[in-house]
Image (cartoon, rainbow, N blue to C red; front, side, top):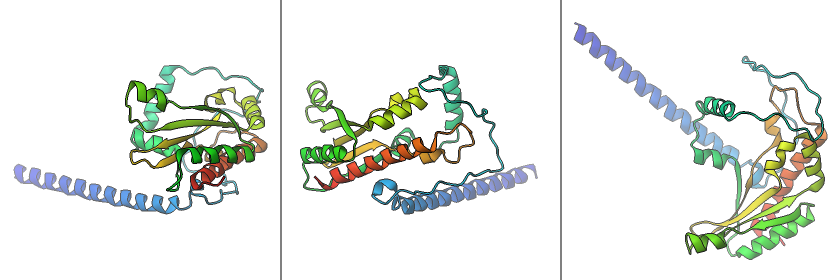
Length: 245
């Protein structure tokens, strides 16, 4: 009798686990299909950005936040300990389904250059459009030359170009001196393993913070400037990817 009950429980558990796995697979497929539909509306696919500000949302779970504070220009915040960062990130990653490669892909905005364009033509378009849109070219790094000497003589060509809207830079650093780690804006031009040319930049969008409960928000003027920089980076990449000189 006990063996029969044990077998029944085992079968029930196996069935439950199978149903759970099937449900998880179905949900994963639904998420993939939904993401594919969203990709067509991606800002970096060339469609206009969403102009309206998302409404503030309040769910059933309310996270405690610090009170609103007065922002003092050019004032650094106290540093966080390595232990505090580790505890925070590992707690957050516990619920993260992404691999490291997935997460890096999430933070990257990419455009593939049209066939027939040379690397140098893509770079020329990049610089021309940047100057036109008041994103000043401030430097370039070309690590591929040294990599070919010390590691792989056939390593793909990769160059990182830096651009900056100096007035927006000045205002952002007034608000958060720590933001210097993201500055200047960079667009990489890189060959892939098949010889195709890609343009890649960090994809950060200030609107991601629109629903955050923390009351210490940036000014509307700085928010618009940040959105403008992002929009201009997209236009620069689009011009370079299509050979628009």
